[in-house]
Image (tube, rainbow, N blue to C red):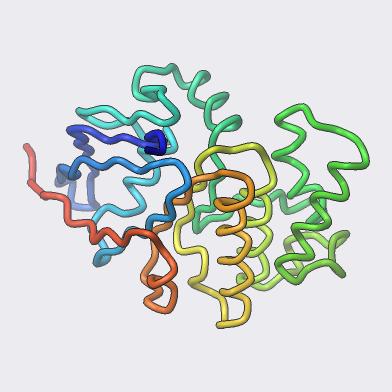
Length: 226
């Protein structure tokens, strides 16, 4: 049996709204195995993006544990979580977080540089990933000149570039037409099949659900807390 890459137990998170009310989300326990392709669905407000933030260590839970690659990230310091994230996770959030003043090539190479990889092979690898998402002729351009869909494709190429074990993607096909959705999915799935990564995707895109090993409809229990 494949090893467990992600394990969630007793996870509780809170968030506040503009009225000052605090809501508590209680997530179901979850195991994701190495090499799986898992899609998370659910209505707006069901906590899908919050769950990705918790898994990435960008938000800490009120209760519970998040184990990624056998490490309980809830016990790490902020600095330790940053290092762990850089080495083990490839992330595509809706905000994308591209370096606006740098070229597309530099944006994709960034993850490799974080892993202390240098040289011509890194450049070739990054160019190949940009080619895979249809941007091979624009490697020297900056993200400011791209459409939202093109920016999304750069973010996916960057996430796949490094040696990350777990890929997290929040609506990776939301701004893409059918052809470019296929390009992005092909690259994410190649990461799973060829480079032994594991994929967890949040999506509302019903076109792509049939391509995943599992589709989980997220319905955490919500409670208002004083």
